[in-house]
Image (cartoon, rainbow, N blue to C red):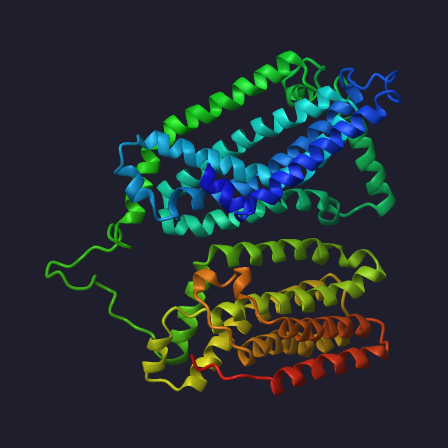
Length: 503
């Protein structure tokens, strides 16, 4: 738990404790200042029925954030620290090790929701709403235990079905999907279509108003459905049941998953592929494994396979694609969105190319092998550049095709956006190539391994300039020529500042 706390706070606990003490003093001062003003208001009365529905929806939103964080933290806490071999050979019982790691996952899961829960709790305490001010942190603690349990079951289930190494990729994808689930749900009207914006807003408000005990076939207040919302307001029986339920689920999860946790730790400690590659009778290489690619194809396949094994990059990529979906489905609703369709495609593909190029061009763990390879350095740089550009260009082509088929883009507009798409993806990758930043692949996304600030500025000017040009092209505005010139100027300056990639 101390290790997890230090990882979350970055070792800056003294400042955190000072901030916590200041907040406590501010809450006490605010309470005594407002106590006489709010003394006659029933602030600690039970929640009315009409408030249970919105409170339950807010809890579902926070629980989704916590589950997303738990899925990402579970695999790291269980299998990627590199100390399980020592722990499982120590006098500690395996279930104690798993329980401590599960509590660390719960702490990580609680952090995203805490950005909303802590300010709201402080506001309730300042106003003297003690039932909400004490019940909300209690629910937060119970929800973090439930999210940690769900993260353990999902992660260890994937480990059993896919193995530890493949689970790293799948868990990153699932974590991104959980995190974007609420966003996709909020955009469901754009997917379904059929009604105008005002009708959709009225329908949403009507649905929220009817989500209450005893309305629209929903059960009465005493039903299990409303138990979490009532527990937030510290009603005795719901709060007690929630504490017992979350504690029991957490304890049962630890006991039930200890064996699978031990097996997963043994798998990751074993040599890679020891149980998956049958050997021949003579002890040589497995049958059917003697074919090797050559030339550009070998380099491209190598880079794409490494990208497919990078959980953090996959989660970032998936989130960008998820946020692109509502744009593709809503561009046919109005003129402004029609103009924003091509703009979003150009900007998102260029941004995604920057992340891919940082991996393919900079993150190389064995540069000495590349130097000794029977290929020229120019050919290797070209292939690594293509490995970053080809996937994002294909994604952009698919997005533009969808926009064109939905009638959001005219034929001439689409053909104008194609060179902007190629320039955006290719130029962004070139700017990474011209300013090499050799890093280890495991450290590629750490803050200490970021490009210099001036390079970031030129990349941003280039991408924003092309996006603005795409927006201006939708209406034939001449100022798009100025933004295109600014983008090309940024690209030219980046070329003039290029550095060698000798490592």
